[in-house]
Length: 114
Length: 110
Image 1 (cartoon, helix red, strand yellow):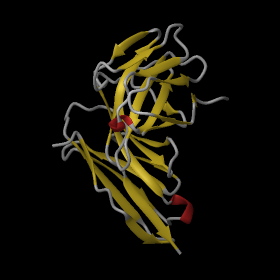
Image 2 (spheres, helix red, strand yellow):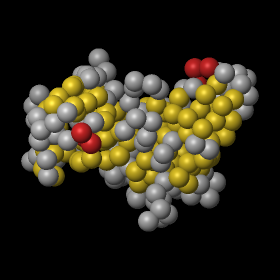
Image 3 (cartoon, one colour):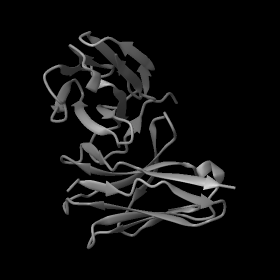
Image 4 (tube, one colour):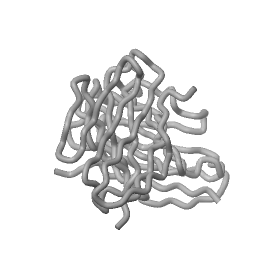
């Protein structure tokens, strides 16, 4: 079946601009996660959704980052006033129930802030 | 101390060699452990879960040592196609989020 999909695959923007990154989870998965991976590092947790609600947003680095999942399926990660330090691979994952489940990752969006 | 630590490598090994990676973790309450494989510029893909009793999948064996708080991955008869970064991950936050190590890079050479 179809896996997790993310769009765009690459995004180049200028410092100060606003960006939106989209994630389409595996059909039927109630849990959705966003991670960020910098070069040479492992993925770092940003936020976890259970259904439509953000159950844990403790990994969001500051208030420029926000994510939504209005219908409990597709999620959008929004970054305001982008900074060069935001450049990274943004990975989305989904799991069936969110409780100690296997997480399946999408191909990621590579964000470059010039 | 980081929650999850790995030797970043690279480990350069000849084809056919056996190679082992360790990953240490600091939270003794951690319950679920995983090894992911990540190819260059690709997403992490689950290689195997790690159980207390250990588990084996073909050439790959994963083990958990709770007393010393580490997990290990053993690759036997390594292939060129095994070249990748191997990430260990632990479920934390009540079982809702993965905490990853930095990954260990493996290069299998002819």
